[in-house]
Length: 121
View 1 (cartoon, rainbow, N blue to C red):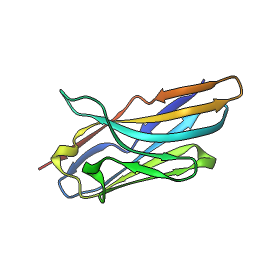
View 2 (view 1 turned 135 degrees about the vertical axis):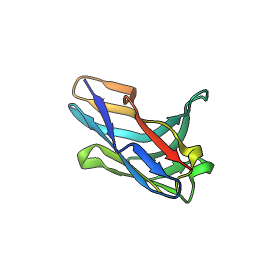
View 3 (view 1 turned 90 degrees about the vertical axis):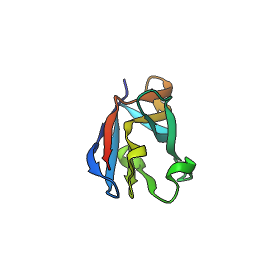
View 4 (view 1 turned 180 degrees about the horizontal axis):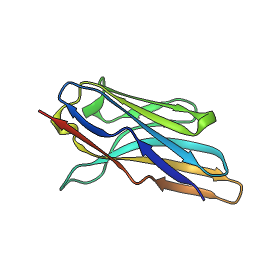
């Protein structure tokens, strides 16, 4: 069984920074894509950024130039460095792993429990 555990959320003032981390645990051979999504109250969950195993990245327009996603394949870990945060970034942030290959099976999509980011004005 594969689990994702996020950390690094919290309360920060506008203009500040936070770094989120997500570790995938289990008998993992590989993970094709890892990413971060967010969901603010009353809104749908949206993609923030993702990164493939070859290092290629994709960002939402709203975070380009402010957020940076990276991953450590050896540690099955993905990071999200968030700079110049503003109150519109306030949301629950969820880690996602796509096409996770393990000893027993391949998982198409796995979600973490989420970590809350609150940006005060």
